Image (cartoon, rainbow, N blue to C red):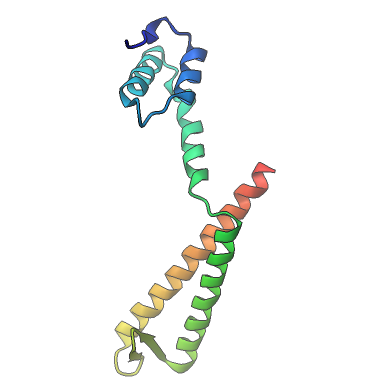
Length: 132
């Protein structure tokens, strides 16, 4: 038997939506959101749900250490490539003198990957400071 959510107060709907298993009961979650939308209270839950979803994807301490090590390794590869004008990918060497476009593309990919690692670590550290 399906519950009648029209009799629930807004606070009760928000509590039920927070505690319901939305993977097992997606139709109930939709009904609750529909009731909140009809009442104009759906905007209250959107920022909280978005914040909770973004916090789940942040790396923990071990992940931050791993990402930092990957960033340091990529930094070493970038500095090595810049000083020798050679980049190696899967046992193939690419030289700036013979193929500058490919060399710069690979170097740019390494720089992007390093920046992504650093960004994830910095974001996780900032969120951890805000939660303290």
